[in-house]
Image (tube, rainbow, N blue to C red):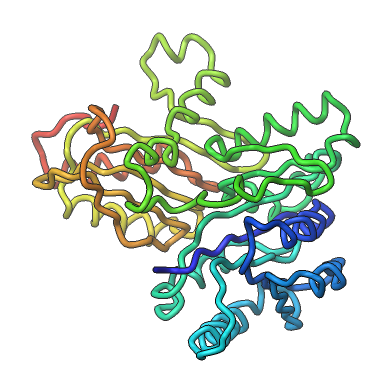
Length: 357
């Protein structure tokens, strides 16, 4: 069984260290290895770590994590696995990787997904991003890394709410919802988060309940965002409602729905085309696919140009058997994504007319 990895990110001063100091002493996270990088940030309280009998801290002194983590992270995980394989070796049930505040989390996710050895032993369990409610809007305005941290999150932990003006706080929460409609938001004080709310967030697996795939996909969040931010004329003209955009952040989030089964070949051609043209700007894709000739649905999950192997489900979670693909993109429009899909479908099936909802 693969060891789950939680990626903890968030901009400088957003409360990651305070959160970790709380988490490492919780019984729910016993036998958890924490890998941190202290470049430019306050370290964890070493006394707390030393007093914890069920956690081990490994510090990486290699500088900015987003620039140099690939080799260090691979080597660290190799060493951990080697230690665990020894007769008296310490066993870890879970790993938390804390990025630096200036880190783009995508290269770290890239490492976890593309290194063959790591992918066989470990699995990304979720991305948790801390956001300072008092200064978060300014941070998003000034630092593009913080926008990607929010866009790639499965869970947004909102910190320092007691220091935030209510109007500004509501505006920031609305902005975060536009950047990433499906991420759950949880306000925490002094890092006092329930560890159980940080686990089992990311890639859907068949080890979970079948109905969990709907909560994982959360396509209704994109429809709600579109309905909230578009006027009634859009509804009258039959526009796709599953779309949200934040112009200042150049982030778009939307759900494409395909009524008919898709041929495997057309899907592969489309994905290859997207990856070659705009792969680095497609921050995240997750979806439930209806493939021609296959009774069971497939779950896909990708970050930028990289995809986890498709996960076949034993059955559809409900009567809705349409293909649904959720996208979070940067500087790539929904119309571009949709048009490339339609063109390839028309080539593969000239008689098919407007398969998109």
